[in-house]
Image (cartoon, rainbow, N blue to C red; front, side, top):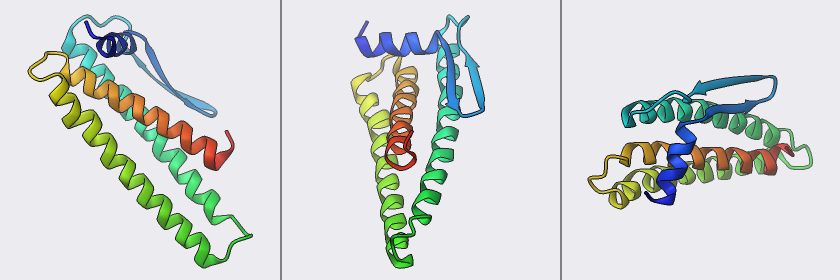
Length: 137
């Protein structure tokens, strides 16, 4: 078993919670045994963390708009650059967790689970980056 699969299995076998101030959404993967069940649970976990990323992304855009030391044009340019950076990150994440995982796990039964786990990990990392850089969290 590869270490990445072990991480994927551990992630699917635990209680997955997206940390959202004042609320939390849980995906309970604790009783699952089949690869299909674990994959579906990781998919649900991804939906939760992706929703949180989108919330944080919106807050970051709002924080840029509030930078009064910049002109309206500068704020707009910064927002555009941030949007481009996010679109580039999404493209990277999709290839890294899709096509790359596909080649690494070619014909392997854990490919889908590993792909969803990769998406969860990348999305959680990006959320933390945005929180740190733009929201001071």
